[in-house]
Every structure is written in C-alpha cells, then in structure tokens.
Image 1 (cartoon, helix red, strand yellow):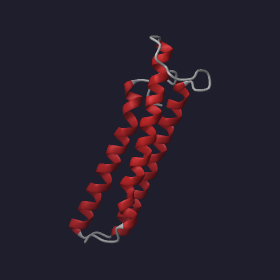
Image 2: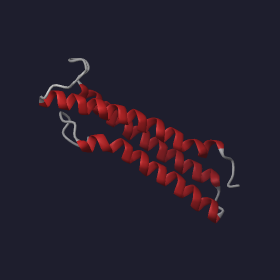
Image 3: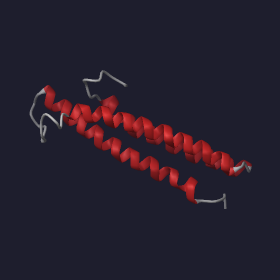
Image 4: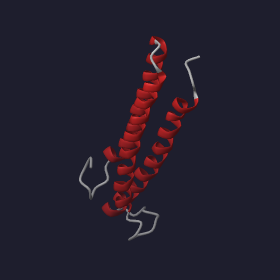
Length: 120
C-alpha cells in the first residue's frame, strides 16, 4: 500500500485522517461553489457520492493493512514492551482505530449532501 506491508509507520497512521480531510474539503468547497453559481445539485451529489466511495475504499484498505500490523491473532494487548515488534503492533492498533474514526467521519461529512435538498 503506502509503505512496506510488514511495517507500520507514521505515514500509515496519518493516511486515513488525511483522506477524510481531503474528502471534507472537496465536498464542502464543491457544494459552496455549486450554490454560489447556481449549478444543478443532483450532479454535485453524484460527485460527492463518488468521492465518498473512493475515500471509504481507501480507508478500508488502510484499516486492513493496519489490522495485519496489529498481530491480534498472535499476541494480545497491551503492546508496551520496548521491542520493535511491540511498537509495530501498537502502531498498527492506533492506525486501525484512526481508520475506523476516519471512516465514520467521511460518512458524517457526506450526510448533508443526502439530507439537504437545496442551497437555502
């Protein structure tokens, strides 16, 4: 994915919230421009739906990779030993939780496109 599959890094930890932030900016800036220019909101909703689907797929892939890093099947938490393996498992667990939070955030970010009918 973003890094070697056997290592969890700060890049893998920051990727899901970055995707959420980009989705947030895309959805809200596009909606603001569409309302200011009087564009058809149906087509804007389709673009936001496509961006939402792409963001959710990326976040799920990041969560899968993080789950592999956690080692939950081989070892149980807490991962607080001063070893490289424990650090990788802890980073994988943190990345998995951040990915789950980012998944929910993307869904909540896209809800206004579903429920708000017009630009009033």
